[in-house]
Length: 228
Image 1 (tube, rainbow, N blue to C red):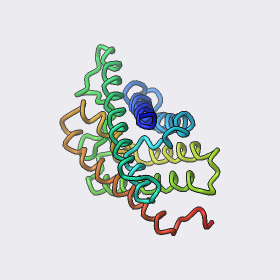
Image 2 (cartoon, one colour):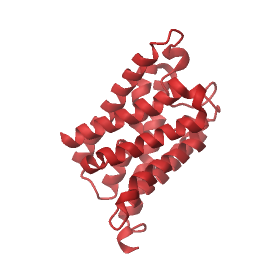
Image 3 (tube, rainbow, N blue to C red):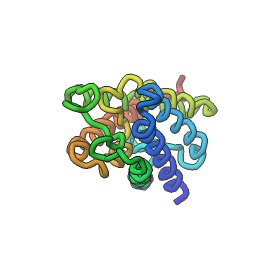
Image 4 (spheres, helix red, strand yellow):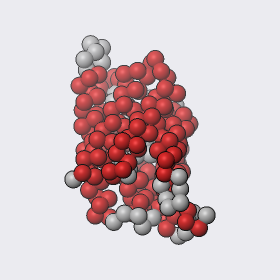
């Protein structure tokens, strides 16, 4: 329960402040500010709940840890349930807060949901969106597994992981809004509905492929930190 609660709180924080930066402050802080909001939220949680649960706050990370042999699937399932719940509650809270502004509507302003195609940010095609999410999640989970592996400098793990999320957002916001995290996508999509729900499959499937691929790479020993 302690680990699940930590994962709930961590994912809640990531979605509330990351997506909140886009919805509430996006016009003022721009894409760079939104990128740092996601990264800094992750850094804070890495040091806040990292000692409790490892601060996965992302189903792709938990499944990557399973593939790497660092976590049993039963524990990953508990983590994922908590992560999706945290993201969903955060999206609800964000919607309530944003609705306090007279000219806000979920249909017009959204909840920071992910997407692709006509009418969405850079209007990238589905293939480009899928490729970005697979590759970005793969690299993100490589950073996480490497920074938290045996022999790595644990004091700087949270900083390295958070900054990697910043640079992923700097490159990818215009492509998909950046998921690399199925829970982060599920929460806003549940309340945004419509196209966000219809396109949600990509932001579940692609990050899981990328995360598991990174885990398999570590499992094979090709990126074994103990041998470095």
